[in-house]
Image (cartoon, rainbow, N blue to C red):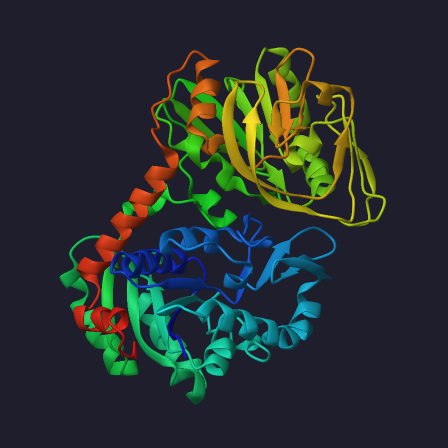
Length: 489
């Protein structure tokens, strides 16, 4: 069997994704063939794997960190929350249906076979697989049929390292409490723990380590400091939007309405990295800023439902005033669909509302269709005459007069639409801002010089920086054993 270790958290958003990315990069830097794996993920930030199909964006990033092609088997079960129909269920890259939360709990045991099959495939030819859990094993109310944490670990015989987030407080209680409520079989899978997001003098936590050891017997495999480089990585979950700093002194203010079912919002990360850009995420209850030069309407997992919320916030009127003032608008994927005259969903794929008026800023109409477009693509910006690369993940076909002014060509076909006055554009292409040439041309059209550098190289450098930090602070004996062929337990 391929060697494996699993990082599980004492709660959600404790930093497991970044730690796995850093560890697989560290292993790759030491010459190992290493691969990431996450049995179940819940996120609307999806990516297209190299072998086709959808996976969580985090596993795509971890594959990049491991310097291996991303595979659908690295994230065999992906849940994409949507509106009335609960979550869309993606298994081994393909949509298999929708389910509400309670119904999904009944479906989970039947998905274990796919999870174990994918785990075996990921392990073929690898020296090491580093697995990421989801949520927390302390959610013992969900233990029956679990495929994400201890249910997987026990079935696959993968030792577990717990991750506790000291920045949120209560880390000792969360570790000791997890130990207390796990059943003996699950508790036996835990080999130790890592403290994450520590600020200040690490020696101040020495007594904390002793306390955890006294209550649990678990060793500490390291205290990881707050990793500034993590901010340069694509974020996985929209929970991070709640912590984004708003406002700045950039020459160009770019406003992004935070839709209820926002998807693939990491499209905006390259703009956030530009020193001259003040990227403002506008939360429900706030208005679109009147001094924004550009509004980006991001992707959505449920276009019709988000259109209703968009209007409920008064953002439709704000957006029209923005355009009348001479401001510009870019719609991405679901945001592109929202900018049109009408959105129809005759098959009820998104919910019970099957037809609605769009925002009317583009002369196009969208009809949702059962077949989902999921592909990585090479493209060209017809607007700025520069190369692009990215991916498509969408339902629906958009047609209308404004598509004759397509801003993008994907392969040999035009994509997207532009208004007659050129102020409003939309495209199905995700990742457009990651093109350094496109971003430079876009900013130049506002009279601004780009200064963010090579975005993809910056992400890669951040992964190396995180790997180096982990090598410095993690327990040397444990780490060397993990990366040298011994048992990580």
